[in-house]
Length: 331
Image (cartoon, rainbow, N blue to C red; front, side, top):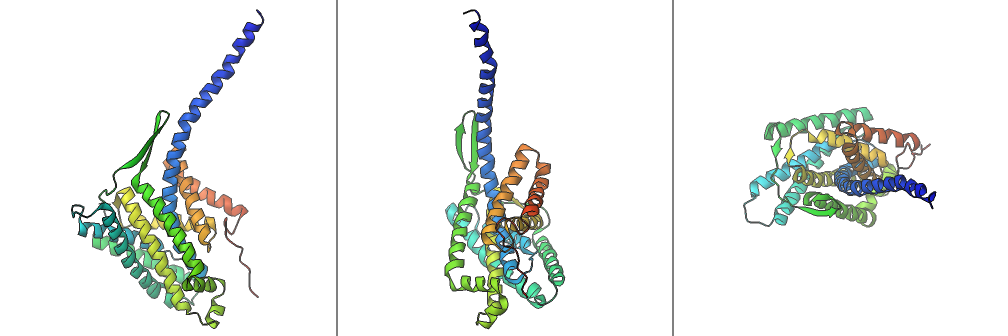
């Protein structure tokens, strides 16, 4: 019996270790859920912008580097609409947000069409470098156009959805703002609607035919010019929705937010597989979650390094992206 006493005390270190591990997990899991929601909402915005990149590239093989500024333009149009209506207009909050989205979608869609007609259609048959320079020029023009009209400083966006979903997990309170929930819900609904439209509508089938073989689609009587214009408009519409939603979530805007967001969304499109709509969605979510986790658990200064490092790592093993198909050279 005397020999059994030391053995009983030998159990205490392992029990203490298990207890400390359980406490660590009970603190870590709520923080993980909090950051996961933040990452999903950011990834949803990247996905909305990335679809515009991937659709244009999938059909005409060009990168629309002005697309990030279309997203910025959509955010500003939403803010101008909100300023015109006013937060004290007496309208319900959902009606004000709906009006912001509708006006932004319509006006930004027109801008998307103008960008295609002015910056891309004239150089469609030119070398890709010419189209790239044209896109960069349009991007700079849009930035300065908004800066001249609205000023280059940060502009505050009134908070329309100030509340949040709160629930406790142990000693930690998980805090999910309504604006982040709205971003995720709206993005999921738009992705479902877009998938159905591309699969079952006449224009969706025409878009898929042009993506496979533009010349053959022309021979079959498909108006490829109309399809290309539609692609630019659709990409602008999705970017406008993302711009309005992120403006409501972040609470401030400036004319230069589109550049970095565009680069990140392009990265998401390449990560998922440029030319693949599901790939753009997946790439956006992965990039958003990776950035958020890096900012939370490493440092906010390293989030871009982690994001682009993840891109390089995946492309080393999957050069066509996660869901992209390798290009087959036609002879």
